[in-house]
Every structure is written in structure tokens, then in C-alpha cells.
Amino acid sequence: MMVILTVYAFLWGRLYLALSGIEGSALSNYSNKALSTILNQQFIIQLGLFTALPMIVENSLEHGFLQAVWDLLTMQLQLSSVFYTFSMGTRTHFFGRTILHGGAKYRATGRGFVVQHKSFAENYRLYARSHFIKAIELGLILIVYASHNAVAKDMFVYIALTISSWFLIASWIMAPFVFNPSGFDWLKTVDDFDDFMNWIWFRGSVFAKAEQSWERWWYEEQDHLRTTGLWGKLLEVILDLRFFFFQYGIVYQLDIASGNKSIIVYLLSWIYVLVAFGIYVVIAYARDRYVAKEHIYYRLVQFLVIILGILVIIALLKFTNFNFMDIFTSLLAFIPTGWGMILICQVLRSFLQSTIL
Image (tube, rainbow, N blue to C red; front, side):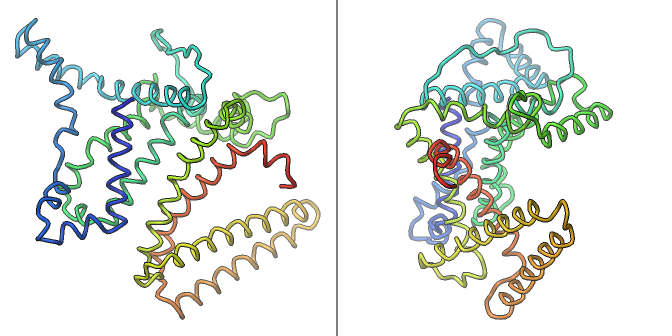
């Protein structure tokens, strides 16, 4: 668990240094050579070689050094590192959830020899919250870090600095499919995709099970938030606030900000969130109101929204320093913000359901 927490602390710390400009300033300031040297460290220890030393030493004493090295290479070829990294994510997720919210219970680990193919939907239900989403979060951190720091300009330094983190991300995403029998068979992949889409779009009923409906599965994944105490909810909200840091750091890097570092830039960036929410409300209302009997009105609303969006982009291009790359860069800021808002709303769901909203 401490290994995963250390990776989180390391990556979030590097992201803060990159987006705040501290890292770039330290690397460009030759009078601060000590800090520059620390930031330029390639952290070869991240490769995991030193964590394998105790095993190598023990096997060397029992079987000899060459046999110990051969055993290490054999385990790598058997993807033991991938499985171990994936299992670390499982333990960290459930240990962390139990520490925050309680509810410790037995978790089946599946000790049997797996010979049956598991569908993508089933793997998603099992590992989405514990592995896939966390891997996407870490991958997003590394992408933003590569885009907004001076170290990443040197490809070798960036690879040496982040290779273990990318290995962790790849292990968390790919392990369920690598160790899944016939996981890459084309026909089974097509069937899995159809099954997954049916699971996503299943309308269902109050009696639907998590295996049938994505909505039911989602609510079951949040059940621990309904029984947790005040401190558990408070800590969960505090942890979810980390997703808002993407927006806070990236909006100042956009060309439309023109290098302005005022807090007003960050506050104005929330207009984008409000506009996106407003567009969603309008489209949803038009769909519910007109899509069944007056379909032409629904298409008219969509057309007007598109025209309005084009006019806004043209105005920004004319009167500000906005460029099209800002659209894609801002997605790295606002998608995490939206996810953070969803997580916080899940914590406060019982309160929100009791209000008009």
C-alpha cells in the first residue's frame, strides 16, 4: 500500500512543480544548482531493481547467484511483475476504502485455475474503480506533466523518470485481459463489446442486477458512502478535491490567458463549466420534450447550440489570444473537474436527493 501511496505523492508533487513553474524556474536558475540537481534526478530506483534485491540475495544464498538471476528473468517472462503490480492496486484500493469508511469483509481472490473467458463487462465491473480509473488518473498526470514541464523536453530523462509509473498504469489496465483466457481473440472481443454496450444502455428496472445494468452497478459501487460517518465523507471530499487542481494549473497555461496569473483567470474558467452544464440541461430538456413527437424541434435546438458555439469560437479568435489548441488543452483541465464534481455529488447524494435538485 505504501508503494502506491508513494507513487501518488511523487506524481502529484511533480505535477505541482511543473504547473506552478517552480520546476522550470529551478532548472533555469543556475544559482540554485542544488535544487536543479534534485529535480533532474532520474530516480533509477523507480525501476524496481532495488526492491528485488532481497529476493535475489536470498536465492543466491540458497541456489547460487546465476540461478537467482535466472529465476528473476524467468519471473519477468511469466509476467509476475505485472500480476504483482496489479495485486498491489487491489490491496491498496480496498485497504484505503476500509480505513476511510469501514466495512471490512472477506474479499474473494479467485485462487482457482482460470480456464473460462471473462467478458469485458465483468472485468470492468470488478476492476473499474480499483484499477482502471486510477490508472487513467495517473496517465493523465503524466500526460499533463509531459506537456508543461522543462524536463520532458529531454525524452530520455522523461522516460527514465516515468517508466515505472507507465509500467504501473499498463499493468493496472492490461492485466485483467492479459491473464484472461482468449482475452485477445477477435470473435470474443466483438461479443464482449456487444455485451458491454448492452450493459451500458440497459434501461432496466428496480429489480435489475449489477450484472445487467450499469446504473445498478454504479449505485452499488457507492453504497459505502451511504453508511460511512461524517469524517469518512469529509475525507472523501477532501481527496476528491485533487481533481480540481488540473483546472487550476492548466488554465494559466492556455494562450487565451495571455500569461495573466491573476486568480480572476481561474474564476472565469468556471464559466466554461457552467456553460457546458447549461448546454447539457437544454439538450436534455429538448430531448425529453420534443424527441418523441416533435423531432424537428429537437434538431432545431441542437442546430442552434452548434451555431452558438461556432459564433463564440469566432469571437474568441477575433478578440482574444485564443487558438484551437486551447480547446484540446482545456479538456485536460475540465474533464477531471467534471469527474471530481461527480464524486463529490456522490458523497452528498443523500442530501441532494432531499432537495429540489
